[in-house]
Amino acid sequence: MKTGRKNGGNAPVIQKIPFGKGWNSVIESNASVIAVAIDGPSGAGKSTIARLLAEELRFIYVDTGALYRSVGYMALREGVPLRDEAAMRSLLPRLHMEIRYIDGVQRVLVNGEDVSGSIRTPEVSMAASAVSSLPAVRRFLFDLQRDLAKTNNVVMDGRDIGTVVLPDAQVKIFLTASAEVRAQRRFQELREKGESVSYDEVLADMKKRDYDDSHRAAAPLKAAADAVKVDTSSMDLEQAVAAIRAVIRKALA
Ligand code: DC
Image 1 (cartoon, rainbow, N blue to C red):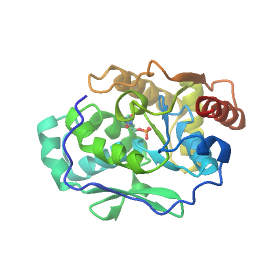
Image 2 (image 1 turned 90 degrees about the horizontal axis):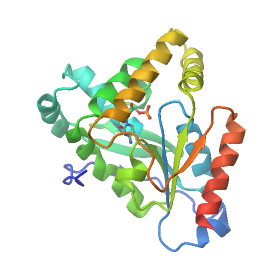
Image 3 (image 1 turned 180 degrees about the horizontal axis):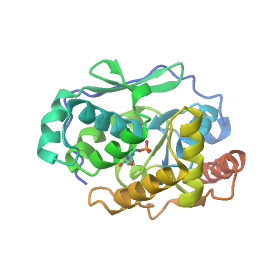
């Protein structure tokens, strides 16, 4: 993928993160910034694991899916046809995207509005997947993601972080689990939030998104050749975190 032009001032705004308390010996072994890239399909546990490990490491956690979700959400709100690249191209310049960290938690602001609370619905999931297939959208979000990792130690999760966004990341992990296990996890999450969905719907959505995300032409979901693959199907959260922690330690040793 082309690296894209500067996108009209989309700016990361970073709250100062205290550095150096987590995994000192690991971090001090490298002088420049460190990037941990975690890719994989939805529901594999990327965001929970990435957030926990970023906290331990005192790195910033970057949830790139939230950016695609925010663009999808704005397109839905503005009635822009999601797969119409020309229509999306005219929407993008009107979106000023920012990532901020408030009490260590990532928020996405579009034109100054914090949309973080509105982007977790099944409808927005599908919209995010649709708009993420458009090269114009991927280019639009590229610099924002890349700039964050230029000046900060990051744990960044997404679909193309190890392959496209941060191909030089010191640590690359491809996290996966069976579609059924992932759907069950997502189903529980949605139910806890009061969304009325059935397991079968969640599984069908999950399979469709997996298919679309891994078959699109632009930066499809796939493991980088040098990524360590971890399957969390039979792991609980604690086991998965321990497995990923071990991969990071080994890679940075
Ligand atoms: O991780 P998530 O479920 O919040 O991501 C929402 C959608 O965004 C997902 O279906 C694919 C897309 N996405 C992407 O194409 N590239 C990324 N780096 C992150 C997400």
